[in-house]
Amino acid sequence: MINTHEILETIKMIREEHLDIRTITMGISLLDCAGGSTERACEKVYDKITKYAENLVKTGENIEGQYGIPIINKRISVTPIALIAGACDSDDCLPFAKVLDRAAATTGVNFIGGYSALVQKGFARGDLNLINSIPEALASTERVCSSVGAATTKAGINMDAVKMLGEAVKKTAELSADDGSMGCAKFVVFANPAEDNPFMAGAFHGVGEGDCVINVGVSGPGVVKTALEQVRGADFQTVSETIKKTAFKITRMGQLVAQEASRRLNVPFGIVDLSLAPTPEIGDSVAYILEEMGLEKCGTHGTTAALALLNDAVKKGGVMASSFVGGLSGAFIPVSEDAGMIAAAECGALTIDKLEAMTCVCSVGLDMIAVPGDTPAETISAIMADELAIGVINQKTTAVRIIPAAGKKVGDTVEFGGLLGSAPVMPVHKFSSADFIARGGHIPAPIHSLKN
Amino acid sequence: MRAIVTVMGTDKTGIIASVSQALADFDINILDINQTIMQNIFTMIMLVDISNIKRELASIAKDLKALGEKLEVQIIIQHEDIFNSMHKI
Image (cartoon, rainbow over all chains, first blue to last red; front, side, top):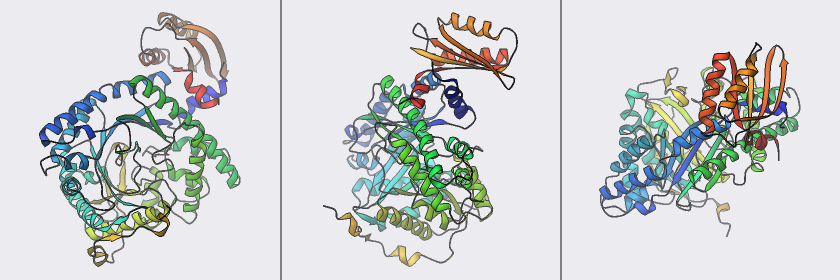
């Protein structure tokens, strides 16, 4: 029989330390829906998604009950819609946003990702139309998430796109002003996007993927924090070993759930994304892990080193535990979704500049950060450009999900509710970046991209 | 197919009887029982055979949870694979 201690340890992780499967995301290719009239293409999109994902939510709930492990979200990602819309007769992309929203509601998933375009090197017809429609698409739908890949290490940074996206984020914030500028929480700009990422808002189903695939995102910052409490004062190799062991256990569970979901839905298993994704609940915070390592407040000197150790140890522990590890895999640092980050930002320990440094060593980027509503579009674009440059040069995924909260100023708080939490409005530099962004064009790929 | 049933709470008369009866009603056979009192908390772990269950384990888990609320203890049933995958290589 399985050891009593192990059984109780697992139960304690789930009940007290918020161990959960963060998401089961079904990736669906829509490539075979493209072409002809937009109206007909939308019908095909709706039919395909609702057929493939018909049992996704119910299956997720059954697996949850079978293993006694919460599966927080069931979601769908689709082929970047710019590819589908670009092959259709109309320039209007909005019908696709509406149909994705409708398909998400029918299948019962809480988010659907893939209202996306990949423009790192330039714009095709569908890309431009889609980017122009993002503010209205996000304001007029509930469950649709949008992302744009504007840079890669291989291609450099599309600064025309960065300029447009700064403006798009501002407009999205204004259109959803009554809702805390919530639209911006559903949009992300990427460097080196991962095509099998199961997490929102940046999930989409890459064109190199199969017709349909199951990707699973696991989480468990609380479990890591509790494990580190047992080795207080020990040296860093002990910290690293402790995190690795914990990450291994968490990921094994993700692998089990992914395989079971794949079997029950008769869809191939894609990857397990072993990210530590915080939630606003106390005890489910990445910031508190960093503080457990000995920092008085997250954001103070030493935070980047602590995060680097954490991110690396999570990957090392998880990689042996799953047959395919993918997505973003590491530690997320979304400010509004992490009680410790919120507290650190409110007391002034954590600034945007420090967060930017932290994104050099975490798994993604500047995430769920609220800035004053009167922040100029050019400043938003410049923040994006900085972040994309970090991704391009360091050959990693970086992203920006920023909320210029309409009507809010530094010191205010924006409430998003649920897993998205609440964000203290953080100050940005007041010196202008307008002439820099106005240049437009393209920042070339770095020298180390020339590997062939 | 096997599962682990964990019962935790304040000890009182009839916990084992009620849980065993419920498991029998679901066609679940008890293979092994391990019971201790840890810091005044009654903890019982059962290894059970679920090969003959007629419903999704998820739905049985809900009924057992409800029974636990009636008995003022926590009753959890989980497929054994979660423990095997987490703790065994």
